[in-house]
Length: 88
Image 1 (cartoon, one colour):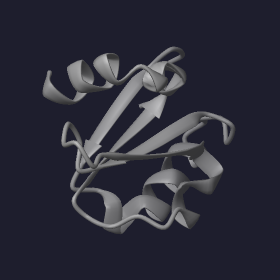
Image 2: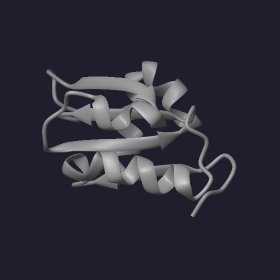
Image 3: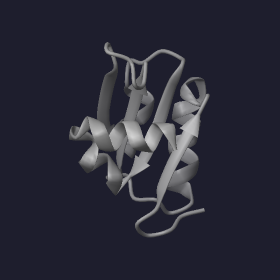
């Protein structure tokens, strides 16, 4: 479940984001792993919230959203990369 350099994309997981973070950290994923929650992905009013895995449960986000976990989050400042990731 925990691989160095991994990227995890979770669909339909916003309601369980606290449990997802707790389980990943319990399995050895560092609490400092970057995460992003993307609402309205690929729309003109897209919103990207970024945090560390330990903060995932505290983010004020609504479904539907996509959760992205891993170092790739650092590249999300480039919307072209984000769109490719979401549409893949």
